[in-house]
Length: 102
Image 1 (cartoon, rainbow, N blue to C red):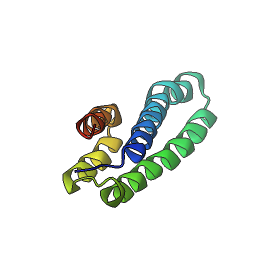
Image 2 (image 1 turned 180 degrees about the horizontal axis):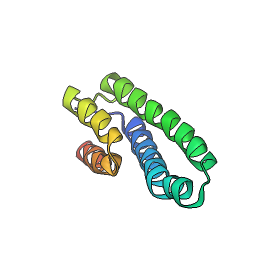
Image 3 (image 1 turned 90 degrees about the vertical axis):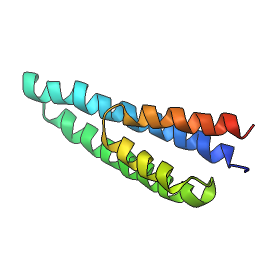
């Protein structure tokens, strides 16, 4: 089965960026809010993270037909985007898809 490797690479990159934004929100902006009374960092990081999260979910849904990804991969990609470190775990599976298609 041929897969759209270029789209998979973009999906992996988006997962990395979204995962980093989640970690920054949880381990950077939230401590700044509660320890140093700087809530504006959560507002900014939260908006960026929300935008990236929705983009990643949209990319998984579109990837169902473009790559094509299995329904389970789309499901686990969306669930993985919800949890910290989830996108990095899903990216490993996506990277295996790239290796399989070579």
